[in-house]
Image (tube, rainbow, N blue to C red; front, side, top):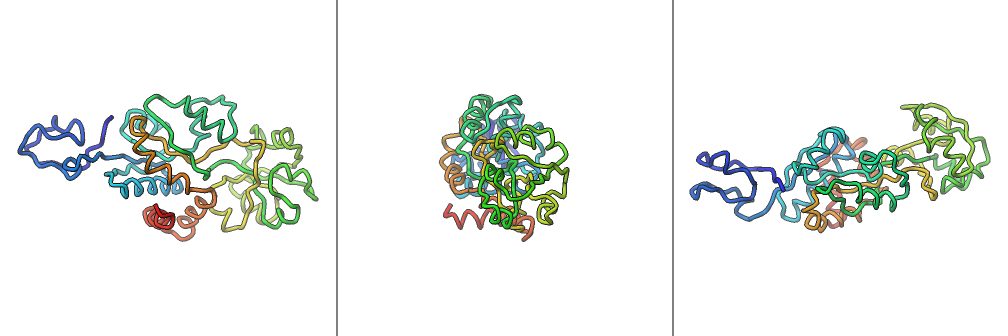
Length: 300
């Protein structure tokens, strides 16, 4: 495994002596870093250039530091095409990912939909150099969402309950939703729910709150679910591809990293992730402060 060097040693050490972090210098007079003296390894944690992903990455980083590991943060990298090669070659050791979206990266034509199916297939499709730890309940995936008043007025808990709604349903979402398998046609074929479709695009949540539409395609980690008091409808027939938050790690470190990060995933619920995102978008707190407070509250 390649481990990123995080401390400069004495000038007498040649560049060749630093090929592997954590190893003693070939020069007995060279000054060792604190990580070399203790024998600890440096774990590189990465993140996408997206506030929600960075918050989870910071939670992972601080949890690992609290366990005594040295951590190097490589945040705001970009999309999968940019960071996946670094994960595969071991330049990055930990990355917060989303099961369904990651599975589609490796297997575009997957038929898996439920959390269990997606996770199992993802384990099979990952390169040998990578592994996934326990997934969280928290997700960042498509959903059908309504206002709390509309849910209460129509006794809605799941998507299938929409078939019993008292009024005409108007579905709002991005224009491409019209042709997506989970769009209006999929909604009708899977749940027997008929809707009129309105391409609301970037104003989908605003249109839902205003009543222009009464069902909306909203991502499950959207902080406005809390700030606008919205209700995400359950999806018992897995119309949507499940995309739970999951740590992707260097395979030969999975056991050690799992001891620290699996308890984090166990605590990271859908509502917790929304709350964390609200602290970023509304309260304007830094990812570091958000992570520190959350870990403390969870006893981690």
